[in-house]
Structure formats: structure tokens, C-alpha cells
Length: 345
Image (cartoon, rainbow, N blue to C red; front, side, top):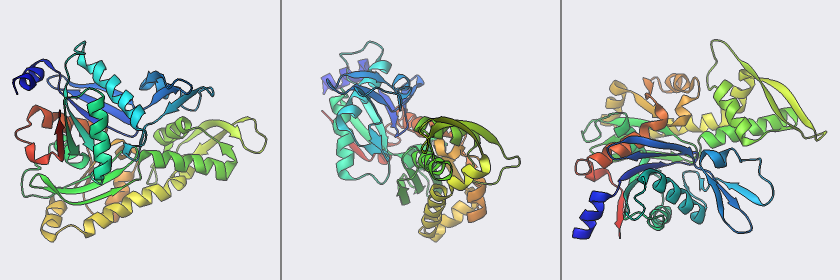
């Protein structure tokens, strides 16, 4: 016990939003200190890690045969155990500031629809990456705390968190999730839909980084006041040579219809399952959108049209989950009830 409190005194406790697309780290007393892509570049022959984060993301779709740029998380959960461990260890070491001998306590945000096996994989990865204690918190609750919603009251709060791999929709009251819908559709599926559209409509192959850039620059879920277009580059599938063409925001909106429709249907489904008393609270308070997917132009307007409710995009939606996890870390005794699972050495 004494050793544990001594370790706690010297270590840098961290909160982590371990996302499919990006990993954000909050350090106790310092705030957000790291925001990097969840990508690891590995040498195939030796399994040696060559780069982690932004440096590895630049290699996506550009590596020679002997190097593999891997995204170890798929749909919000661990797909590659060993590579996730490398990712966690690297990020924890980066924020520990030379305290290599001291093991931190870590809070990790996980999808609300996570299974026991997936939960175990996250805990094991973090323990093997050098953490002394692992606490898991559901992403929607962390997002709600990050938006400053009163999660401990009997009042219903609804959050739609659209990440890279999952969309989490939850109604929260009294420190718990009353109803939840977790679908494995997020930013990655939007990118994929754009790449598939380019293939079908233009016989053109584009990389995932190009698809992501198209989504950010001209992607939308609702007609824009002024439609846009942009030039994209890829490979012609018929002639096999590089090619350039212009696409419009109208075409991209059409390409995104299916994944956007899945997110809107999940919201509708979640509202149908909400108890009437909490539904009345949601009518008064509205719905908060968080996560990178909330930045898709017009998605809030489309949801408003479908539900007839007040939909608000949180300020800085990308960091809501890690800010919420940071608040839990700073006041563990207050937020004890929101912790899903805890494991210590």
C-alpha cells in the first residue's frame, strides 16, 4: 500500500482517448499534451517499430513491401494486440517526461458497446505497456463530462459521439447510461464511402488519406448555402496511370448518404427507446454532438430536421472525450461511479 501511494506521488497520471483514428492524452495538472494519429509503422521481417503517430500516418499507403503502416484499432476496439501495446507504451513514455521507472495510473475511454473480451484486451495492453493501474470509462459519459453536462443529476442528457470507428449515442442520468446505441460506423466509414464512390463513378482508385481530405474539405450531410468542388488525384483503374479530376460537394454528399443515414437511424432508434421522463428532458435541453464526425458540415442540420430537436455541436468536439476523462482523473472520488472497470497490479 505504501509503495503504491509512493508510486502515485512520483508518477504522472494520465487519461487517454484511445481512438481508432487519433489518440489524445491528458496529463494530470497539465491538460492535453498529446494528440497523434493511432498509426504504427512496423518492419515486417523483424517486427521492429519504426514510427508511431504523425510520422507513421505519413507512411499510410506509401510504404515499400518490407514496411507495414498499421492502424491497430478497428471500430473503436483493439484489432492488433501487440501493435496497440507499442502505441500505448510510446505515448505513455512521451508524456511521462523521463520518469521511465515510475508506472502511471491511466484512465482509458472505451466504446459503451465494448464486450468483456475487448475490455480485457485494453486492460492487458495498458498493463503490458507499463501502467500500474487501469481504469476504463465509457466514451459517451466522458464526452458528456467534457461538455460540462451534469451527469450526476436525475436529468436526462443525450450525447452523440461520432469517432473514427464508432458512433456512440447515449442518454445519461445519475452517473450511468440509461439507453445506449453503439454502431460501428464513424469517420472511417465516411472515408471508405468516398473512396468507393470514386471507384464506381470514375473508375479511379484513391488512397484513404485523399478520401479523408475530400471529406474534410468539401464533405457535407446537408445541402450547402454555396456548393464547393476540389481537384483530386488518384490512379485510373482502366488505363492504370495517374489521373486528376474535379469532384463537387453534391457528389460527395451523395457518396456519404449511406453511412450518414446509419448514424441518423441510430439516433432515431435511441430516441425511441428513451424513457418518457428523460425524453421530456431532451426536448428541453437538446442533444450534444461530440467527436471528429460532428465536424461534418450540415450533420447537425440534418439531425435537427429528422428529430425536430435542438442539436448542438460541442465546442472543440475532437477533444471532448479526453477533456471529460481528464476531469474524471482530476476528481476521481467525485466520478467514482462512472468507472466501468478498474484493474491494478
